[in-house]
Length: 285
Length: 269
Image (cartoon, rainbow over all chains, first blue to last red; front, side, top):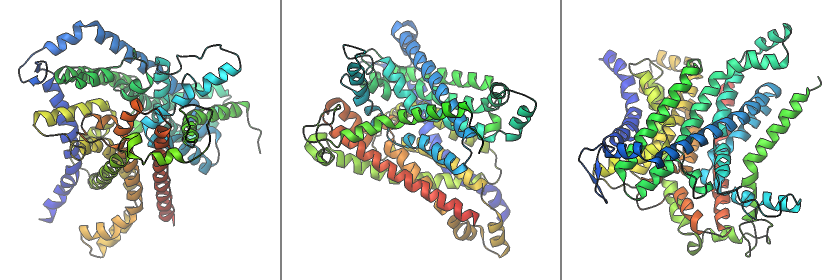
């Protein structure tokens, strides 16, 4: 009796969490797949099979442009997140000797992530706006005669906003990888006469690669489905797949939105698999 | 004291600029929300007062801040209880080997990297197909759990990894049952981390927007209300609201941090 309970126990304990994800993650995604083959009669969805939603998407130029624009955001945000996260994590991991200072500085980078994304985006208005801090500074220095208008409500602002929101997702895994590097390896490389640059390229960079991969997966998936930043920071012409889905739901076109979501999920999965093929992250998990 | 290389100063400068980039804008709206009544959305500051902070609680100026705040509060508390319960149970399961453990692990992680808009759309569609009405406390709650449980679960795994099984073995040797061992030995030892996990889950839920956006039903949670305000509020009240909720989050994070520290200190002793 006790024996059977013992072997059954882990399953009972794991059940609630399994249910949460089956009900609120797997079932909803399956439903999206199902509804994407349904028809839309102008005001509600009709349970009749059609491939029309997909053929609409694949034959329209609007979707192509929107996807290309989303990829542009992904690429730019990924690049800037990496360009910021690597030096920041490197500084924390290798230049700060005191452990408590290390923790404090890492927390300084972490804290904004736990606050509201929307508020963080709104905070850019008084900085980047037409009468914002940057423009008034530029005017006072006589660098420009007219306020610069592309600072806010533009693709520039969208990318800036996303880097602001998501750089943490790159810093944390890279910092984690760097902290695991055996310091002896670096001393050994130094003893063998490697320059600082060589150590960085041949010792630290390969050992940090899994962290970079994990960070990249986070940033890429977050930006692929991004909609809030595009709405708040982007101008009228800034488009992303997330925003498109949102607009279609606004006009109750659920089947079309679902088809778009299916494609978004597939594209995101392909990107994630691509990253995983380049770098092996298993050691990190 | 060895002389620091040039790269240290360059990187320190870079780090400083990054921190400014992170906190500068937040500090800007913090200052602007302390303006006088004639205040505006941009610098320079016009006067100094707590007028706009007070305006946040005035119904007619910025919609129903208090109602959506209390909704977010209740929802956050429900999310905390469920996240902690679910993730601790799963964490206990993961201490022994069972079939499907790897699958459940990847299922949990995948919830973090599925684009949020998909979760929201999916739950919304599911409710519609099943003929249920979306509400912040049903569909909204589910959407929040897909975001908070993975974080809670990962921290719980870390806590149990560092957990010293000697205490439990001692209790068992003295004849305590599994349940008794859990309630009297394991739970008191992990309780402070659970408080920390709860606080983090709360801030995640309290600030969650995208996953909730399509499934909150008729009544908005606070972030949804704030998002609505961005289009039609053009006074510093918006900044004041931002300042207040950010301070609220900061307080919770500080509390979480100190409970974690309290816990790790006690473990060492």
